[in-house]
Image (tube, rainbow, N blue to C red; front, side):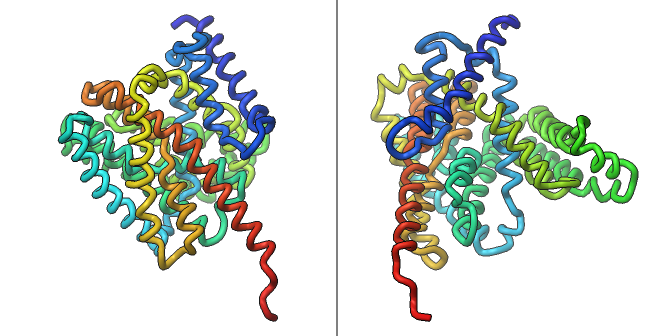
Length: 395
């Protein structure tokens, strides 16, 4: 791929990313998540419609964008949640989801409608926490009790399927895959404790003094951490998503200096450039023709996402959340996309997934991002309006 073609594709993708928030603000009705506009823009400028851009030309930058998406998702995760009820319930809910996915996808496989049982079943257990974060932040839905349960559910729905992908789809030998997973986990643990080795020494002073200058030391070290774990995960035959997620978890433990300033910088570089680029590139590679030829497959996977991943939340969170927030939990946990893209690519690469199923699975993820978060936001706005209109209780 020549430099000129790469720059042209990058220019077109950057234009789509720049126009997306403008279009979201100008379109009437409820605000569409920017992710959807970015994906649609990628389809429009991609090879299947206008042919102005080619995913291969910016594939490396798009993968870095995927890394930033999961870095920020891992950074939002407080590991202490897993010692508390939100984490425990989230794990139980995911295990229930796995059972439902195995049963229903097994029926589809027996009927000859699904060939890649494992990738499809795993895809239906995922939650796109990284994709949801900007939507939830914009609508102030990450705070309070609901936010803790949602972050735990989203983290489990993102991290556990990544572990499963690493074991079942990452390497040819499952024992080797488990060893690889263990090795990457140990490396992440070592990196978590590394700052204690330099505490009080010259290196920490240098990092703190340079974080606000042109050196941008903390930001550079954060990017280095991300790339180290991405490369290590790739070398071990694991999905890069795992490396990025672990990088975010590690960063939360050792982020030096002004943490709030670092978060703002990461948001700026991630959401400002790399992450939108990933979604635009994903739209370029979406197989629209296969979806048009078999639209019922897309609708079937869309319904299965809600039934398998979402509906259990209505029952498992009865003791923890009111009914209206359980509905929101159902909608948000059923939202999936980045891992569906990864699973579809894995299934196509090893020849186990039908092309029409890969396209339908990704299309269902796109539809879930379009429908479920918007519905949850509408429910939240109505809940807040009802709370504001309710008469004050007796003093």
